Image (cartoon, rainbow, N blue to C red):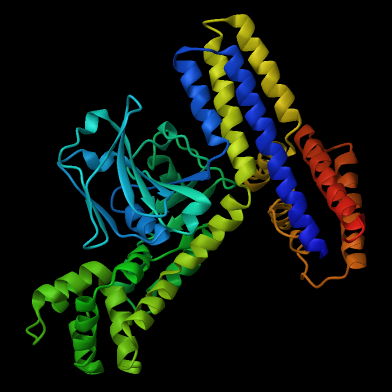
Length: 472
């Protein structure tokens, strides 16, 4: 067994300990709160202990959040309903076969009819939005085995019990101040939030290099550029769409450069290609995606439809977002889930004061005992302080902490190749311990910085103990 394998085993054990302690806290809380709405809240929190981490995708209308969700889960989902139901969240969970159910505000559920002829079309015509809490969609997506994805566009995300967010912005020029408009009261933390620009491909309508410029600008603002429409098209492109792309490509480079200059020209120019098919293609790919697809088939006419879909997935950058979700959400799932459950129990204890002051204080003491045994919660708090500039450390130090608490193997957590020798790893760890210990001992260090340094030192000491274990 390699050193990194040992490290991953240790991480698994830590996750198991976190789950055990959090579950025990829920059980203790349920003994103190035995009935009523507060007990129902605790039962819901207890169920969350064994569920995948929850990730909400939120954004203003028109930003492309729902399209991005479709690309993530691998299903083009649409709902047909009277006005109002569009504001109901869709929850995507793993299921071996597609299922759809409505969850009402009273907790009851009922299956819903759906159609698989074009993606997944859900019939909500008979649903009263006033009594609907959410729509549960079961789908056989590999990502959903590790993450429950919530399409919460246009919702107040504070009303949804989730562990992390993907915040969707419509264009790269949007400043961080716009995040406050995504959901009332939402104050995203860099630790639990991934910011994504999904409509940057629209910028490509203006100039050939505009998308590349958007990528650079978005990166400078701490956001990823993901062309959600192309990511969705990679799973939903029909045979008719492919035939239309081939027909447009067959016009030749000069003709296509002219007709694809604007969306209106592409649809209205008199061509021997059905106008309705062109309109549908534009809706599926956008002008930027249509241009790239046509250009690709002009360069490589023999490409298959599967090849074209694969190219679209690459252009969309959806895999970059998936990698970020794996690194920043899945790898921290036990910590994020524990934080959500503990915070939920804290709220119950606060509300319990008005009913039973003695039991409320007992519950608060139980929370304190549990959090003292969960170093992951300290790590999340310190990462938040560091990422938001509230600790006097450099950007390089922040990056080091992101790696240290990433859940990766030992070498990767130290920012070194996996082939690095154990002796070099030990030397690096000892140097890091000395550096952070000296920083914490500085007489001018703030209390937050001292606390952070102590936590970092303990983490490095844990790594050193892992490296010092005999190989099995």
